[in-house]
Length: 272
Image (cartoon, rainbow, N blue to C red; front, side, top):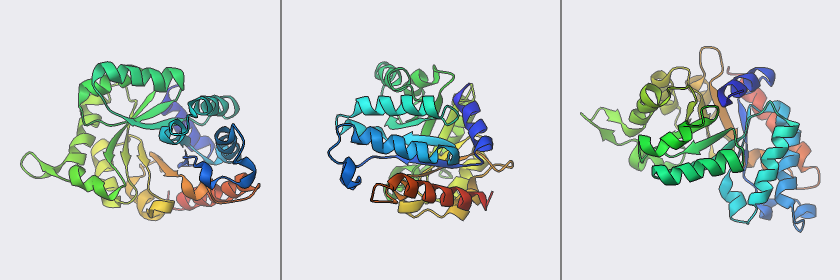
């Protein structure tokens, strides 16, 4: 099953547009995990087990693992999710972007080493830097378009051509019209910019959108869903990380995470 097929199935089976971000910061872990050698794996896998039936995807952020020499725990985590929750795809949030020969190695890392179902990619070096990712036709390639951080406007909202098209609109159109030949592409559009979500949806049609920025970053759920949903009420992977991961501070942290994930999923569904 391809990434887009798995995602569509999860939207339906779990009645969910919620993507659970896995950004493990050991400084915020419950006390009983802090000295465990596999603390990152244990923390993330228990969160995944507690929320899998509420999510349409999981999104581990590679930097949180690599910074602590925990790449082996990331491999184990993705393998655990695939084994225990095969209906929920895993997006490796790596934001890779480099020339073709180097991109080939990054693609091997993401898809063959970590066995992610999809990966986030920076498109700003052009088509040849994206082609190695597109070669894995069953995998998802999720390209940065309109990011949720305030500084994204420094480049993404600049006008090009005759002065009427913003760079993020150019990226959206380029991906939709030229790069998505196998239907494996998606775009990152931040929840902090609902007007831009609506504009991207207008440009790309039914293409999936990964939407970070709700919860701790302040994005509005109602505005996000209304701007980005497709006619069928799907088309979105609305990511929440910190609000779910650190909902609890004690040994019941996974149950606390489930409670917030359920509330978030249901809040999203109210506007579908």
